[in-house]
Image (cartoon, rainbow, N blue to C red; front, top):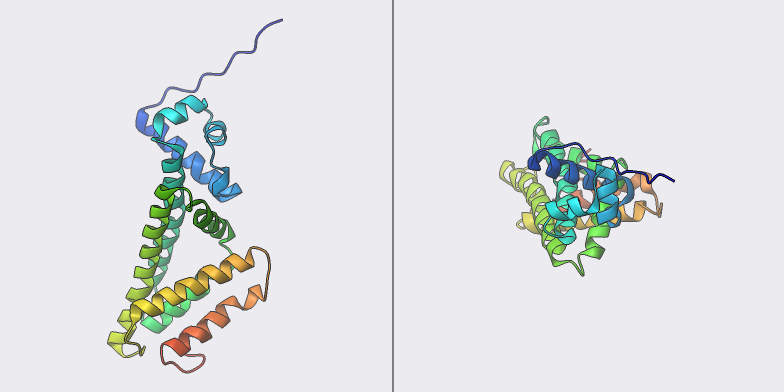
Length: 206
């Protein structure tokens, strides 16, 4: 009876191998959630032995945190690119809200929700979550502050409005994962609420 032999992974440079592992972890997180990013699962997805994954990452806590940041930072880059294509704070804010609440990013929402939960016992992940939430708040604050300067918005607390908006978006997207409430009306609901916070008439954000 012959013993099956393990197919050896193709030889790659350390940088290439690290990229393969990072990509495998990111794909797993988007397909199955952040909790699916385990040593064995990442190894299987990358086509290598678990020991090789352990060799290339400082710890699984670090890999999970890096994976989270890779997923959510890509979304911020996408939103910033969107904002660059439209002019005027009102149009930008309306486009941003409609985009993040359009129901096409459930995979990213799952990563966020699991990161908040897992971060309770993984300080490396918790720190990454705080950094990315700060980054999101900075994007929102920038649009709102620009609107205050142009006279489009009325508020003396752009940072506070940005935090409130971020909380609304996170909460509504999390609720949509279990199809609670009117998932199709999330954007309109949020737009109307933000209009009130910024001294705008109903419908001013489109």
